Each structure stands twice: as structure tokens, then as C-alpha cells.
Image (cartoon, rainbow, N blue to C red; front, side, top):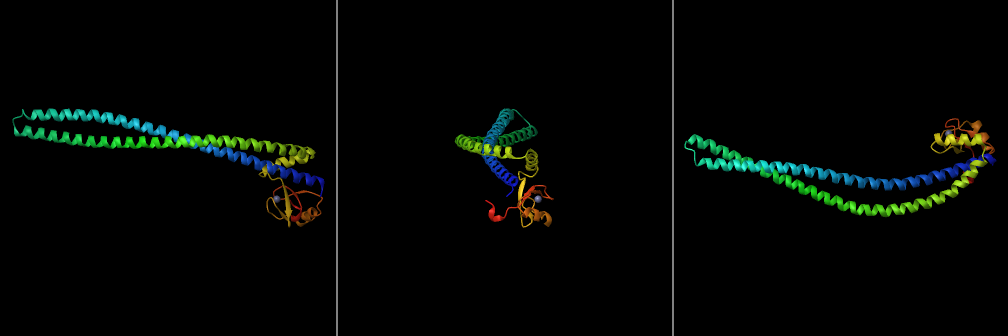
Length: 239
Ligand SMILES: [Zn+2]
């Protein structure tokens, strides 16, 4: 096989390996970030719950004041009952007392509901805090493991990097620039095989005349459809 084609194939292979390594590192980092985001969400949920509780507490206090006023009012109306003479006055007072009692009853029910809601929020906070405790512990462990993993991967990557540097340095600059540009524009794949007349980058057929040139195995061409650098290597000769 032609030397330049071998160089291209080797460089593409190592670059794909490096891409895969970067993807793995990113996935590991993303997994940690996701966990950290989940924890932050829980913290913010807890803040929300605290805020709701304090709003409810204010409501409860207001109700409590109103309730005391209403109780005092009913009490004063009840003592006035002793002093009234006419039936009409009595009826009016009785109505006032009944309305007052009804109001007291409604406010008491409202207060019970508010307190139940506050209890439920407090329980939710406790649950979230418990989860945060466990998740923080996990995250710390996983961060340590991931850090080691990534360090090992990066060490391993260094070997690939130096091989890559040699490969790239051996290549003609113009070809290397073309290769780099194609890598950017074609999702990392710049050099592809052509099998049975089909470009393995875009899976379109290339003209028979060009395919015949590639079949001789001593040249590379540009795919007329995706512009990738194409060559021909029979299936059984591929690694
Ligand atoms: Zn193509």
C-alpha cells in the first residue's frame, strides 16, 4: 500500500481512539456533574419548603390574632346579653354571637389545616436532608474514584498523543491541514475506506472510474459526495 495512504489510515485510527478517550472522560465528568446538580436541586427544594413554612407560620399568627379578637368579641356580646331588655335586641345579639362562633370554628379549622401542612413540609425537609446525606457521601466516593480513573486514562492517553504527534509530523503539511479540516467538518472522520464502490463515510456510491483507481491500492482520492479522503483496503486486510 501507498505510504501516504497508510499514514492517513494510521492517523485517523489514532485520532478516533483519542476521541473515544475524550468521550469517556467527558461521560465520567458529566455523571458527577449530574449528581451534583441533583444535590443542588434538593438543597433548593429545601429552601423552598422553608419559605413555604414561614409563609404558613405568618398566616397562622394572623389567624391566631383574629381568633382571639373574635373570641373576645363573642364574650363581650355574651355578657351584653344579660343587659338587653327587648326581644329584638336579644335576637340581634344572638345572631352576632352565632356568627362569631361560626367564624371561630372556621378559623380553628383553617389553623388545623395550616399546621398539618407545616408538619408535612417539615417531614419533607427531613426526608430530603436524609437523602442529601447519603448522596453527598456517594458523590464524595465517586468523585475520588472518577478522579483516579481520569488520571489513569490521561496517562494512557499521553502514549497515544506522542504516537499521534509522530504520525502527524510525518505527513505532508497540506494533506495534514486538509485532514484536520475534514475532521472538524465530518464529525471526526476524515479518512474512510471504499467497499464495493461505496464510501464508508457517507455510504454513497462513487463513480466506477474513481473506484477502479482506488482498487489499484496506490492512491487516495476525495469522495465526490462527502469530500472525505477515500482509499480502498479489502475487508480481510483491515484490522
Ligand atoms: Zn463519501
